[in-house]
Length: 316
Ligand code: SF4
Image 1: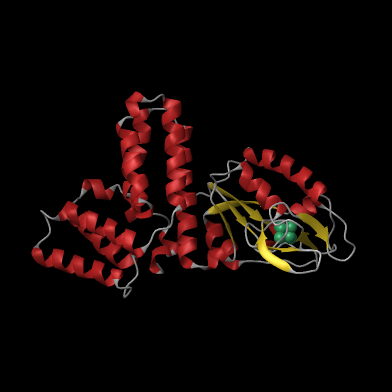
Image 2: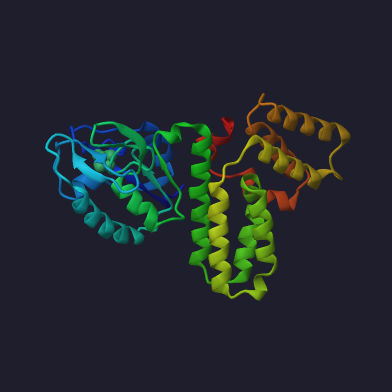
């Protein structure tokens, strides 16, 4: 598959020796597995703003909502230097058409959440955001972001990957000539995926698409994109997935034999009970989609969300 999805990433996660101590934080899942499907744009805030390798370590200090970035031993304040560089860097990154960013956890520059912020007595609270990460997230509020630590959790991993792949497909729609038909077509294929994240957004977006003719193209695209990214930001749960699976059974009621229906409902029940992963009912439904040539379901991204090799649904 062509590497068409561009993701920003904290450079040390790719194995480059850019950390304060001259080391790296190579993450093999990101380089060897996800790396087969994406092209990384790496960013090391501390090196790119002119600090060398090795360098004095830093941490956040002061007000957790707007902390200062200080060197730990000599107490130099690096905040302004990093902020100035970061503002320029995020504008440059606009040209890259990124579909997301993977940050290094626990870093006072690159960490996206729960970063230690120290007070004058040397006590810390895990409430900060890294200086570059904050500026990046403010600049690209709808872009999916994660850190490598959270991506070790299969559910968070599946959610993140689903979002970046969906954003890429949406960007492909944006690259075409604007038309209501293109939005409607995208929506039709993503309906069940959206339902698996948020029944509320599924309803809202259904209404939005239904009144597409009453909106200007610009309004339609903007509102749809906002709802899309918001909906995928909400996590799927077994309960929401069961709702989608049952919804799909409804499309087959006429065609399935009573044995087949019974088997399918049992498999869904096993998933609900946590005895089998989501891939099991999804595979069975895909089998019936082919057997009965179910055209609507055949088109659903939910049933074939992203490269099989990532095995995302084997764990959720
Ligand atoms: S955490 Fe960020 S600033 Fe630190 S080495 Fe990695 S990329 Fe550079």
